[in-house]
Amino acid sequence: MWHNLTIKALFFTFLLLNLASEAQFLFFKKKKAIELNKTQKQDAEYTFSEGMKEYILENYGKAVHYFEKSLQANPTSAATNYMLAQIYFKQRNWYKAQSYSEKALQLNDQNKYYYQLLAQIYEQKQDFNEAIKIYQALLKKIPNTVEFNYELGSMYLTVNKFDDALKCYDKIEKVYGMSEEITTAKQQILLKNGKLDEALKEGKKLIDAFPDESRYVMLQVELLLNNEKYDDALKLVNQLLVKEPENAFGILALSDIYRAKGDTNQSNKLLMQAFKNPNMNMDAKLNILVSKIRQLPNDGIKKQCLELGKELVKSHPTDSRSHAVYADILAIDTQNKEALQSYLKSIKLDNTQYKIWQQINVLDHELQLYDSMMVHSEKALEVFPNQNIFWFYNGLAYQMKKDYKKSTVAFEEGRKLSLNDRPMLLQFITMLGDSYNGAKDYKKSDEAFEEVLRLDNDNHLVMNNYSYYLSVRKERLDYAKKLSEKVIKEYPDNATYLDTYAWILYALKDYKAAADIFEKIVDKSDNATIVEHYGDVLYQLGKKEQALSYWKKAKEMGEISEFLDRKITDNKLYE
Image 1 (cartoon, rainbow, N blue to C red):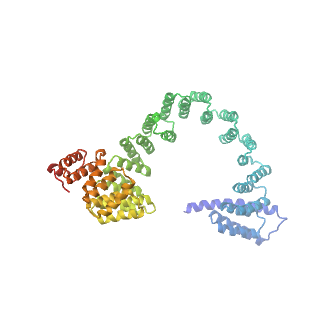
Image 2 (cartoon, one colour):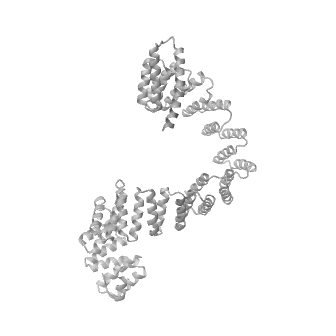
Image 3 (cartoon, rainbow, N blue to C red):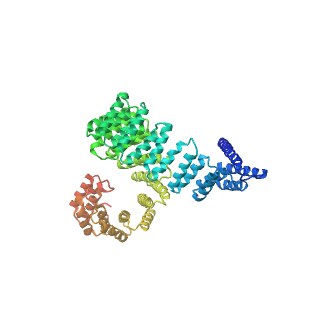
């Protein structure tokens, strides 16, 4: 705190001395126009000083108060008018900023910063022609200000006066010599006017002026490549690589040239060579690889992406980004197990990456690694306790492991965090309905499902699950049937929804109607529950041998319901 105040105080002293000196100069210069008595002079100096203090502290309202009082004591102070203009400029009050800035310049036309501020005000008002006039006046009036040709050139560009802009840049170049900034500005103008050869000449001049600066060669190569002058680019790159055979960006440019010429194999070899080059930094490699990832899935570059990703990890094993990018490539290639491992390596190096934690949990879910999802979601929550998505994955993991007590805790937390996120809120309430049902807390389960339907009365997934749970419990079967009928009306061919409806009919003892529905879906289904249910219906219809065959088929498909083994052993229905 004290250190910052000291710096501000030193800056204030420096600025105050400069402006006070200017004010004193102005006083003597305009002595014939106005005479200040001792009291007026002291008032003007004191209030100006107080205004500067408040300005430095960014208390602009107070600063304006003091500067206006200073002007009352000395109306011909250019410095005070300038400071008021500065404040109104910061506050985007262009009218007042322009008024005070013009007064400052009228009172003192020898200060380049007064011109600059007024020009900037005109620029903000998009009055570019007036800004041009101010910069022209500045350059004419005040010597040794050639650098302002850059601002003037920018204004000329804005109003499409390209030749005038070029003249400005030439003047700067004449005084200060060649520079990348000016050359680039000139090239942009020339290219905009279709003068490629002249733009290339400017680039050649920069190379000749700085023969040891390989980056200028690469800028010229880039310009040639962008304009499909591949042979000229190849010649220039080869010249560079003779001098600097390990120049990674030269090798990379060579790769681009061969790709443009259709030699993909040679291009790929050179790209890998560039990736292995220790002189190529991580950011450059990432930019290249990310641009290729955006083209996936594409069999033509998939193999190359995998190879480059592997090389990136090998070259930068302690950079979390290398593992994350390689994981992205593996995931796109559906190598989910390998992708998960690479994401885990990334997060071990940097555990603050939200998207990577999300990808880890997504892959845990896809791979059905629910024990891992419990651990990873909880670790993510240590870093992002207020991110509802990780409460969702945490609750889902516990729900899949049938630990309904912990799953409901997680879903309740996620619900609290999702009050302003309607889709996620509905998802959390739905999952709570499922978990409370699993915990046999049917009252809370029903309340959750009813809440979802109040908020979203067309939620067919909830209608289906809710009606199925009611049918299993043999409760409110007419209501369950009504819900299920609404679902299958919308999705008449969905096997899961038809199974629910048939099972409700079964609970209502309408076995024939239930059988009719099962017959439409059972032989096409790979769902063991549907197959077992059909067996139960057949048993109720007195077709015991057929029932037994479907129970056995359900078991072969992996069904592990509570009574299935007993049904098969005793050839008898248990519920």
